[in-house]
Length: 453
Ligand code: GLC
Image 1 (cartoon, rainbow, N blue to C red):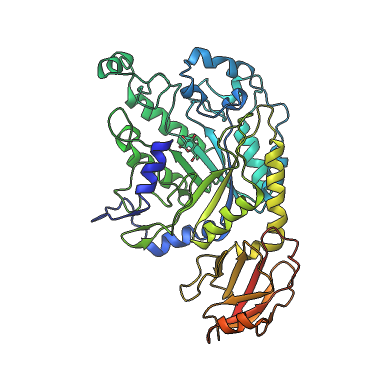
Image 2: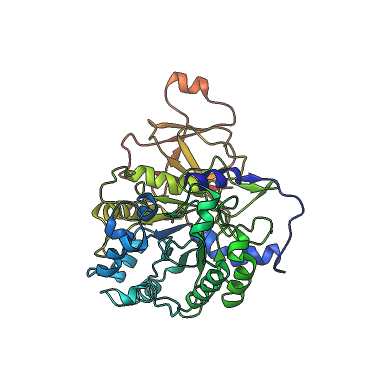
């Protein structure tokens, strides 16, 4: 995972010469295809599979170098009796999320959907039902857009060649050779394609596809191993409007992906390729694991989570925030309360998120603030991360503001001379002073809405 982060970091502002194309879509058409996603900004990631029962990371099979036989016990008893996708969907919606992406298969290889190409699937567990089908129906019913995560990696399939990230990774070339005898990646490629076809055929319109992940190089896997070009062409044929992430190892193509996916870190600025800003979405966890991890304690607090969201939008990006449901099928109480806290804020402040993006450069960012901007409304949103004491100086904003109010209650904020001798001395000719109430509004992060001239 560290490796993946490094690869993504390096690729955040890359220079690529002479980019090839796979399709004939224009830039304008791509912008239109992505318009709903760029507008909605906030989605829910869901990592759910057999690893939820081990409850110690979705990579538990690799981390503990388990064999298929050792891992089998989870398959034999998987029975999330409290799974209620309608409740999940309500929670996502109440948190302000507009789309959701669920793991249909993670690296462990277990399928949460009823695939006709494997027996290693949910319908063969004691639970017996197609979880993906139930999930899609429930989330669609709440008006949420539907995304599928599908792991390119498969630690269960007999033809998937053992490599350096596999639970049975080896120490020498000879050992790899021995282990991989009889394994045939071309058969695995076929399997992968068949399953992606099933997912994009049997569940109606799929809005997002999240394929994960490539790690080219020695004893790694990249676009040739997956036949990424062929796969992507099939995906676009089956679901022409789908939005797809960038982990197929197709960066050589301008259109081998739709958005980039910085994972578990904050980008320093809007990522670019050849100087051009590109669509991006950061994926983040509440705590350090994607799958349910009972004893993991590094949970972010509400303010940190809200800052993740606001800061992403302030740099032109989206946030995909992950929940790892338990083996019984419900959300951990810590996730439920984090979602509800975010929802409380979003209920009153989502106007600074939906349809918003990075503010024009002419607006200087005041200390301890994050700015977002809605180009259609021509409004600027100032997020006060550290609530100021009455005088609030906006450097260089003179002549730019028509009206100022708090976003949460539409209460006017007066533009007036600052009080206090030193403040008056300090104020520049082109500055504006807002007069804030002493009492911090009852909002985790209060937002000022500026109607601009
Ligand atoms: C990494 C991890 C995986 C997780 C994903 C989310 O690729 O391997 O466990 O699903 O990131 O972005």
